[in-house]
Length: 361
Image 1: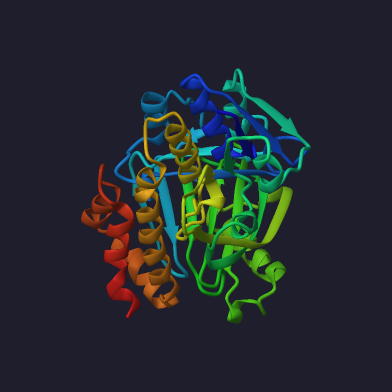
Image 2: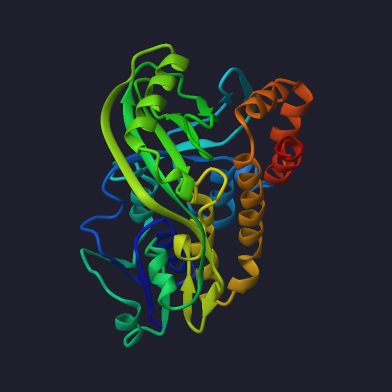
């Protein structure tokens, strides 16, 4: 068995690492000059997106022998609407770095590899490697690569604008803003990754009525709102933006001896736009199939279900007005509701969708 992994992101590296733990190795081809995309960003792993796993870091370590070190854990998530604020508390997940940060998850995974080889600055196609390798893992992160082989259902495209900002922060507290004027059908979130640095991100879908919105204007409002909420002036250290960020899923997880993982599979959850958990698990599952200890299609079924639940929640939120956002935020201040959302082993996506549904009518 000769295995090629196209893409050295989270799913490709997780796949290679799992293969090694079962006596196999792979060649990884990364088109960029180094692993990780070319900017820094903090991201979130939360059980709200991947229940019933309460602690994904512990789960990956104990079940799959894959060890990740997050930047910090999360004890409180603040939710802000135009005129209200609420918070939920508990064991709410982890913040970690991505991209070209020295502690990015991509670099942590790569450091754990022993026998597999990473060829950076190597752009290869599926057609090229299929002539030499018996099994191929498509893990490029580019949905267009999937679309050349099989149908890829695009549910929407988003614009992302963000920056690493400097200030004084509580490392265990996250902030989110829901406001139709601030982020049309989207949201703004802030993730601290030290006492003085954090990531502020504006993300909204590129539906037809949104295309006329100027991202610079929305970003300016988002930065102003975040500064007001956090009660300090935020200084931009490094900014980034991306248009046409695709959220969707492929039709078949595997075709022949080609496995589709990460974004090529459909790991990005529509609700908040994070895809780390799905990317890592899809890479692990593909490796397990090649090692003869699992069936990739069956293993991916819960990932498809999480995607569907997340899509329902996103569609529900997109229909809310600012008055309804204010009402929902008030509801979150009810202790019983907070407990329902954060309770261990709850299907949080389904629970949130159920709670929000009456407000979207």
